[in-house]
Length: 280
Image 1 (cartoon, rainbow, N blue to C red):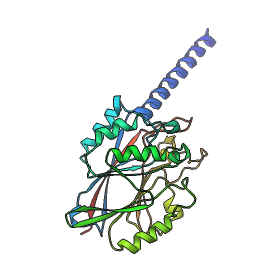
Image 2: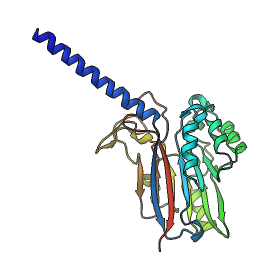
Image 3: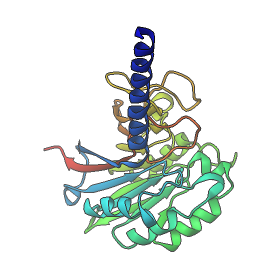
Image 4: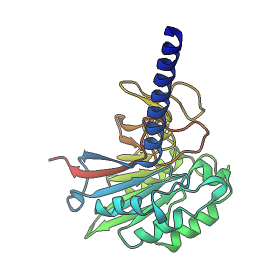
């Protein structure tokens, strides 16, 4: 009897643990999290005080509600001044059914910029997604720089292509030199997909870099952070949050979706809001 009772207790405990794990896994897949940052920069023009940027990364074709309504409503409620899409937006094999309704819901809300991720290049959907983005008013930056104006003031928005792109594309360092020659002294917002800039380009010339790619380390543990790097091995780095170099601040989004068999765990889909201010 005691053995049977112990077995029943063990099975009940195991069932409870599996249920908790399933609930947490579902939470990490479907329940949106809004993360807010307030960042200060000495060279931010006065007209851009309080400027609000919504950062969207690594959607991977996920849909939050019918026609991505929950995500669209959360974005609109932040009253952004700019939306930045930093790649890996398309679903598996370049599928765009979750992307188009989101773009439709956000069209005309504010200026929006997009850069490709590694998956857009790998899946061969770069031209298709850029065409879709442009048709809904999103400016696609492929190693390009565009000025964004508020009155007579402006900031430079720089879009760096992913290394998965063509071999003849400019490197981030070359793009940085070009930006420095054209817009020295101007506030620069750098959009890219990959999260290795502080590791590889510590002295690149810009103020703020927005990127993703790491999915928050996929599995996150309290007091530890992300466990997995982009190669699906242990040892995540620069996977989530704010990182500083002597030259710039880098914000890494945990992203909204996933592209590997290992499910996100304790790692809710993240939408980021950044509010800019000047240093007095």
